[in-house]
Length: 125
Image (tube, rainbow, N blue to C red; front, side):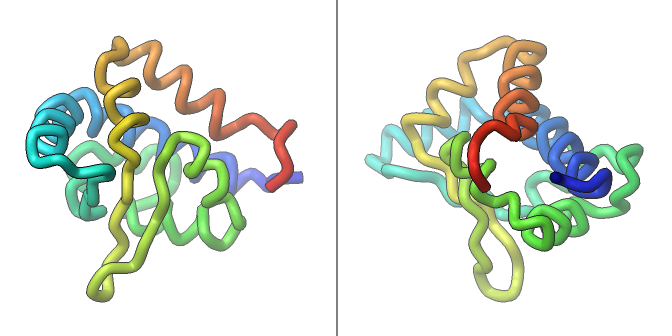
């Protein structure tokens, strides 16, 4: 069973990631596709502005730390997102195919999809 802190971290990530995609996703996708990239690296600091601390995590880094502690990064991979450490800071690696599908969704549909994938406990972790 996933504890309450893990659930809050999943929800916090869903909100920040969907907000990031709404404001920057289309441009990021277009640049990556023009340059022939298969995936996109997004520095975690790109989510600073869209992070919502009302879930109890002061920084987006705290959210990622909690997801790793809870062993929930496999849920992010279902979105085509992985977390890597790059020069002492986290970054998100996003598969371009999945990015394309996500950026052309409406914000409320996108947030519901992300929350559904992240909260789905029927898949083995």
